[in-house]
Amino acid sequence: MLFPLNAEELAFQQEVRDFLRQSLTPELRTAGHRNSGIFTDYPQGNDWHRVLAHRGWSVPQWPVEYGGTGWTPMQRYIFASELAAAEAPARAPMGPGMVAPVLMAYGTPAQKERWLPGIRMGTDYWCQGYSEPGSGSDLASLSCQAVREGDHYTLNGSKIWTTHAHHASHMFCLVRTQREGKPQSGISFLCFSMKLPGISVRPIPSVSGDHELNQVFFDDVRVPVSGLIGEENQGWEIAKYLLQHERGGTWAPNLRARWQRLRKALQQAFSPDQRSEPEYADLRLKLADASARIDALQALEMSALRSQMRGEPMGIRPSMGKILATELKQHLTELHVQIVGQHAMYRPPLNQASQHELTLSEDAVFAMSSYLNDRAASIYGGTNEVQRNIIAAQLLRG
Image (tube, rainbow, N blue to C red; front, side, top):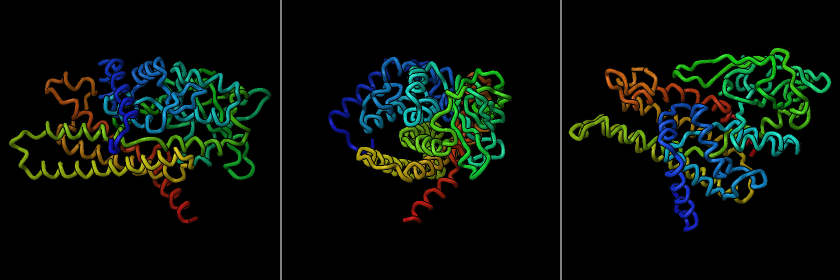
């Protein structure tokens, strides 16, 4: 940790480390180590979520009344840091970190009782229906239409870039329920089962070789009105609230764990008698610079933690963190490819790398997979150009 911990925090850190040694099986650790995407594939990621749920640690950011831990912001930061350092599977945030805060803020008691326990325990797995073909980050232009017919909405249209829709049991979705007036004023927020008739999912393989993304089609899907969150046409307000949670959070622990991986890769790539070469010195300097940038990001996150503890609004910090972290994440993947050199050209499945006749290094295959996957980091969660506009607008208002 960049900042010193008090005795209570050190004891908590040791408790987390002990738990990880006991509960993080070799299979789960391998899944976390091989994950070159945003988060681990569904089977291992959700298995790990359920292990945490059994301990009562699956949703530490939630209020205690909904099953949260009651930890301080610093304890949550320590927890995230230890998970990253141990290479625990990265869990999908769509349920615990995105739709759950919306349900707590805008949902009815019946909706909270219906969905929050399944999210906490990992029996329900959610996906996000925001982007559409032709809309991208311009959510106000969405056209997926929901028409009220009695106690149901009839939903028609499509969503794209829908992460893990092929695994999801539920979706939270922005839909157009009114066409008059400003585009933002006619959007509603719906939650529904992915098993409803009329929903189909088409995979979108990534250039990295991963299958995380999908296009989802709705053909006269009847969604119960009980799935409407908040008021009809209040979806724009709710979406902005959700995006604060999507873009916020902690980035530095995972970036520090990735940096440690690069440091080890550099030592393996150059034998002791090669470490006098200029290329080795240049890469070491680049890693040192990246380490300093991670420290700076962590300092920003710690400042945000202190502000959160004082009850201050998040303001532009989520947008600042999103820009700094995703661009740094991309930079680390570029360095990793430079370190492994020509070995990054080979593209077998990651779990088959060591079985190849040429005994390819898993690390080399991982380097290119993560490089290709993270080209999207500056786009997802709201493009970094949009984040810069948000920052500029607030700063110029003074």
